[in-house]
Amino acid sequence: SALETLRRIRGKNDDVRIELVECYKEYRRERSTGKPNYVEFLTGESGKVLCIGILLQLLQQLCGLNVFMYYGPTVFKKIFHTQGASFLFAALSGLVNFLSTFPALCLVDRVGRTTLLLSSACGMTICCVILAAVG
Image: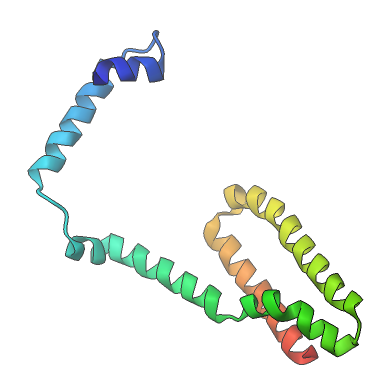
C-alpha cells in the first residue's frame, strides 16, 4: 500500500500519515480537473517554457558549432597540411569540452542557469567570430 511505501522511503521514525493525506488530496484535485490536453500544454506557462526550450535547442544547432566539432580536424589538416594539426584540434577541443564541464557544474548553483547561459552565449559568440576571422 501507499502508506507502507512511504514508511519504507521516509523511515520508521517519520509520521507519514499527513503526507499520505496530502497526496490523496492532490490526487483528487487532479482527477476533478479532467484529462490534460495539448492546448493546455502549448499555452500559458507551459507553452512559454516549451518555446524557450525549443528556441535554445535551435540556436545551439544553428550556431554551427557542430560543424566545427565534426569537420574541425579535417579543416585543420587541410590548412596546416599535417595529420598532427587535426589530432591537435581534436585533442584540444575535447579537452576544453571536458574541462569546461566542471566549472559549469559548480557555477550553475551559485550564479543560476540564466547568467551561465548568457555568459556562455557571449563566449561562444566570441569564439565563433575568432574562427570566422581565422578561417
